[in-house]
Length: 297
Ligand SMILES: [Zn+2]
Image (cartoon, rainbow, N blue to C red; front, side):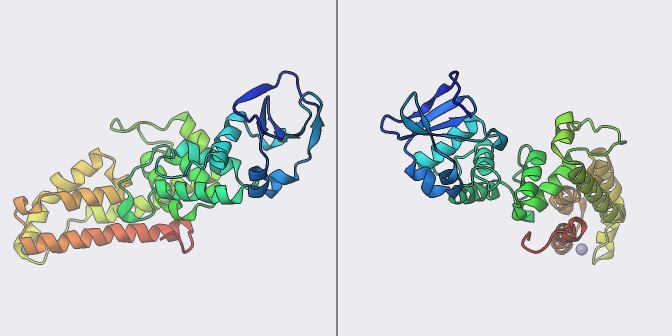
């Protein structure tokens, strides 16, 4: 490969005492190579050819790696400036670093590990964390599966299955955004099917729970449920797509002011424990429905 004359000098990374030119797509960078070579044996193994224009050895990042100059500069930010991959690192930045540093691309294992950890920190891992709703859960799910980010897969499957309206034939719910073309496009056919199957499992499990009027330890308290279950539980759930979101719907039931409805304090406490247990049952059953192994909580 010859060096193109149209190469753009990489604005951020043109070091006066650099001793290596690195070409990424149409950009060229002048760098001190020690750090790069130490962190990546793959990078160190790229052939270095003399560059007549600058009199320095030169590396061309193979185009088939599909690394853009922006990707490369983002990686260099972490290599040279020691920017921490922490809570200030956005999802998009962490994804760029994860991909660019992965074994299928430039293979910077230590930086890849930091990017993985950052992504694991962004997304919920347990039932109690589900309130941190991530943006772009479909994109995150695809990534979590592709890069084996196991601890965050379950919550992302749940989020995608229950909130992105993957059903083909259901009428759109006006309270929620309809599935966009990009959502469907971002999920592989396998993942899309897995999410749809999960939704079927969730609905199949939750339907009898939702439609069975709760009972309590006292007859008078059971009578309260008999009066209130349809207007306060079933009706709102049907209006809000609640059958498709068992964990959230159970939370709504837990949060209802049952004392005001006439339930005694003891029964309120007992039933709340029971419904929390039902949330946990759903969460645990998902392992089996999704075929997830241990290590996913
Ligand atoms: Zn009672």
